[in-house]
Image 1 (tube, rainbow, N blue to C red):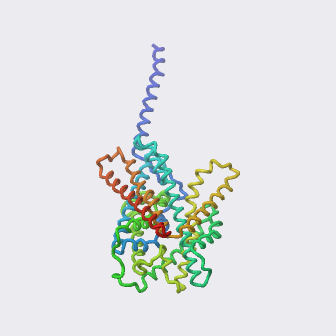
Image 2: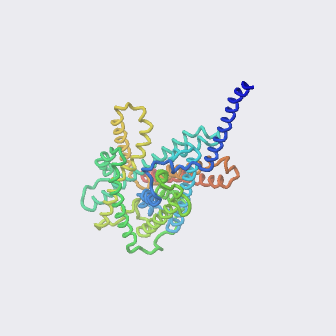
Image 3: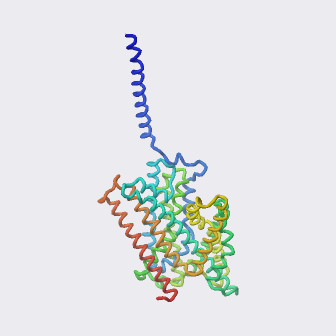
Length: 459
């Protein structure tokens, strides 16, 4: 009897241990359900930004050189169509950014990651999506990365042309050398080559701070001339030909679409849940951008009409010192901003080459890539020194894909099988937005190349 009791004790103990483990597992499981993963709680504490700071960063990043191109967009569409179109494009861009950020936030919870970038979100959505699309995860990441790189590469070309045009006008006004815009583009290498060799973002902070201050001054000068004795509205077109609408959409996309900075800004927030919603950081930023861009486009076209240039400063009077000062300020801003914008395409290329280069040669290799990229940008700008053309191409090719197409595709794949299906309104809404993006892509590229051929007298 005693032996039986002793033998039963280990069995009872084993059963009790197993039962306790099940209780503990159930307890922890219930605790996980009650306390879901909160990505913001796992982000680095030394890089968190308040909601107001996130709004300021988003506005600062979005209110860039594109605002000076809005009068050209209104020239292509007309005052009435331009005003309505700016609001519609702003709503579409804002919605695309909204669904991208929302998808990223929900994906962070599901995958238990503190934050995700733009390309990371696209890739993980496809990796965890329906089985037939998982094989495209790497491809979608490549498309996202290269669309972002090409966007900033094209913006660098725009900067070089604006710098060259500005200094050419100043040179012509004050008896300087009567060089072509292409030659002034080449001269920009004297400044851009050394600046493009800056490899650490922290060294660019002083340049960025100074550029923001100078940019504000130049915008104020431009608005002064836009509102100074404007002509009668009847002298301006309220609407133009429908064939010019693709150019309007492309330039609007180039001007407004700050999607490349949205995810980094959201990832730095202390309370990322305040980024979306009403009012929300994103909604306030988009509303401010649309109003300001629409105002500058409307007043710029109202003042200068069909003579307005690709950059508003280039339309300012040639014989006034204040106007020339604005041109110099904008040129300086473009020079200082070039390095920051140029960092993105270099980073995309370098991440793909770094592991293939020996460690003792990486410094020289990176320097060579930066030099080669700068030479390519300036060469393209010198060969095709047309601001509007670059804006149309970048807006049509890159931003219609990165800013519109990829967000709606990503949301559809993420929600497919969970709360949406073939008959869901979300799918049809995203399908319409995808068609709009493809139309903007095809028509924008077509009309941009048509304009290019006309400028070179091929057509």
